[in-house]
Length: 59
Image (tube, rainbow, N blue to C red; front, side, top):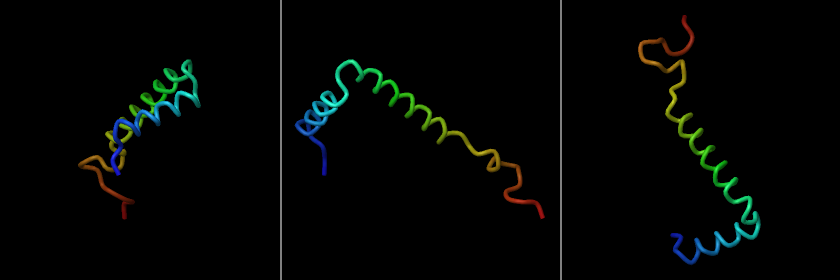
């Protein structure tokens, strides 16, 4: 189920028709920012899982 050039071109045309040419740069920018935030969140370790600290509640 690979996407070739014809399929990607059709998807691009549908997006262009739905959102219009003026809104595409804003849409692309917001998608890029969302991806950057997602990657930053994935790279960030939760506070409780830092090495040297006990995991879970203290008994």
